[in-house]
View (cartoon, rainbow, N blue to C red):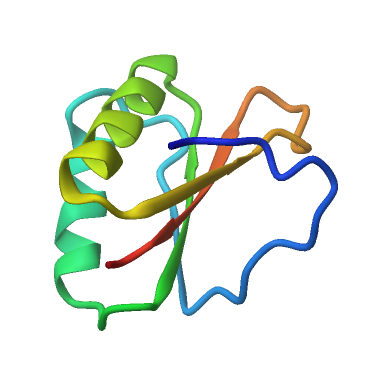
Length: 86
């Protein structure tokens, strides 16, 4: 359910996790822990640099039915996601 925002406005963000430089499984574990403290409908902005984390985050979103958007505009080797808690 990941998609590039394609220049569209990004959603309002309640929280942010910069997980740059962390290797699997830490990014997904920290993401799950943060989401557990959030209310339904809130948006978490996630920044990762490990490409394996991208697959894990996408898989987790599919498992939970959450809305996940990817913003590919960073251009610095990082991956930015907007994860809306269902």
